[in-house]
Length: 364
Image (tube, rainbow, N blue to C red; front, side, top):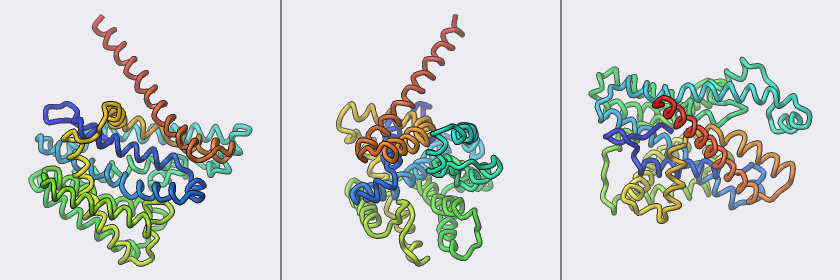
């Protein structure tokens, strides 16, 4: 969820639209509680389908934009540092903010009992930080994405820089193979409590690298439709027969089966990503001005939305409305989605007003 820039330095509109659609899928997935999915096969199928694709697409776009930055002549380390400056402080600050808020909230009468029953039990700050470093933050689990993205950016940029920035394709090809080898070796390693971080890195390193390698690909429309259709079919089949309850996990027991499914994801899902990108780039999608403005907002403000929508606008609000007040699933999802957009919109509006006032005072 890094800022996208055109060769001239401005934002790339179609990439914002892609990020906006991916962020919309994130919000849909996070608006569903496990109890909703247990009671509704339709919601469960939608959830599984979304989780197979949406985070993979974000990592793929991160690799894609890494290549765009490198093609503008930025050295590997500079490219990484520009991104890390925009990612490290939001991740660290929000991680600590969530700890402070929930450490206080679990001690409040009434609210504390609700939080504890939902898994927000008090914990020492050392254990909390260690969990965050394992990509398993119990109070703000969604932050794993930004943390893993920073690590992958460092891995790729350092390997890129080790070859003087002149072997990016070779580096990304080798790292993609290394990630797949890590997936295959998963069952042979004693990872302890670090297994989740290992899984994320090995699963998404090939995706990041594929985005980098495919940034300059321009397949024909027939090839794009065939490739994209195969990627969509993969999502549907995997969601129906092979996904575990968490959506992006697998219900396959064998190591060879898991490896085959993840390998197919790396081969087929990029076709759907390229197809969607081309549809947005050429203006075929979206069909209305309102949809374009909505997706553009979600894309431009993806970092702010990503940080603020969880755990407040989805997890906690959904807990109160669905578990405590017993409201139906679809209205609860609608309220959570509305809050997930409205709160960041208000924050962005206030931020822009403050910036404008500062600029006006400076000129004055």
